[in-house]
Image 1 (cartoon, rainbow, N blue to C red):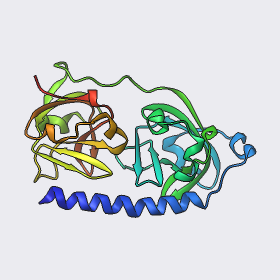
Image 2: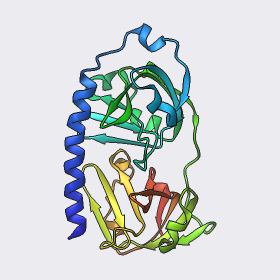
Image 3: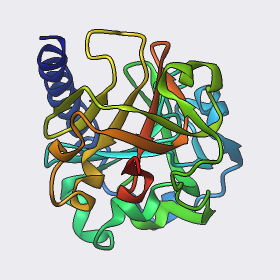
Length: 244
């Protein structure tokens, strides 16, 4: 079945990618105070690719945070995986330096991340070895709440990419692993709208995800695309509900 097949692919990619990420982070070492405090121009995350090998302060909103196994946390500025796919990574050997629940602390926050911009798989990346490298500027937005305003059927989601909508439809497939969970509205389609919940939000769903299967749901958020397929990333349980 397509769902099971892709679940395995996603899990394998996550594991292999995590190993590579982790090795890359380990080789970067812990930063000195002078490195973190080094004067560096503030640039937007879209510009990061033009400063490879240089220490800069990258500014933008952390759109997505997820864990890869037990060894790594990834903070992404561009959750769609487009170009540039800029990220900051924190390896598990420095988790004790960060506050508890730091993955959610940075989610949807406008931040500045300071460090040397390197590349991982040809995309810009900063290895974060200290909380002092990340400055929170502001909350990006309040949590989204499903409602009748801006309500659209899931089949129309592709027409509203980049916009905040409440999307309604029946969940026909639930595909989960240790990395993420997908709610599929047309399980055999590679172009239909779907919902993604990453593992950093799993603790907000103590009852699991099966209760949504074959139920009409409403999910609120910004519609994004991945490989031309529309999706909403759910960050909080309050952003999805079984339709009244």
